[in-house]
Image 1 (cartoon, rainbow, N blue to C red):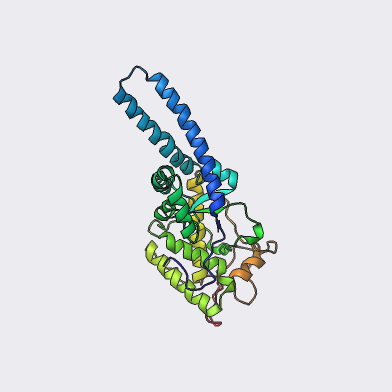
Image 2 (cartoon, helix red, strand yellow):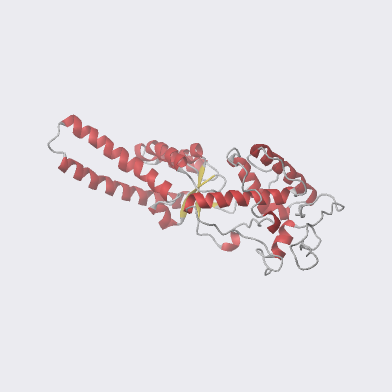
Length: 312
């Protein structure tokens, strides 16, 4: 369940980086790393001149591992996939599903990079990138990562519509740790492309993805929540958690579609076009006396579709 069955939904809104830009970024990183290695080595040699040969050899090996291996791993982990060379070339390392990398991803990339970049002078990495359809080297394959371009025109980036406002914060208690990256990728691809799918096909795919996501979380899809809306709400909850993990535990702004918002992709009209059936956009009815909105009813007479419907 790592990819969708349609041929259209194979590309994320992130564009894989090509070999020339990746090679230039790697070259810049190597220049910085070797410069730091030479400086640290000189300092170590000067300060440990009184030690015996065995101790100096051990310190040399430790310096190599810490600077040329541990340094890039630490930089990629702390910068969430943006080393100095990648920042200069507009690149970033992300997971296969588009999320930010963690320490284990950077560790696998760095460990394998010692062999395919340092010991073979980049020959193995170049061959692997040329063979791979998305330009991934062996470290990316084993780590489950991808190097993407960040500097792309805004018009070419895919849009994943936000969930309807009545689902905001509803899935904060879900355990998402057991959901595989391949399923997240499939959900993200479906939501970005569902407006281009046939309604019957889109509904069937949403039901299947929602069932797999519910099986991984151990909590069934709530009654009255359309599968596409459920997928969007859970995906947004995951993005909020990733943002908090990456940038701190403070409040994170998430896109919320308001009934009276401006038009466009992010407004109510955009959400209705992206998620809703051909009928008009959903507006919650207002209870008598100006109180809180009443709980809307679900109109199931139109049959399957890709749209969101309010809960029963």
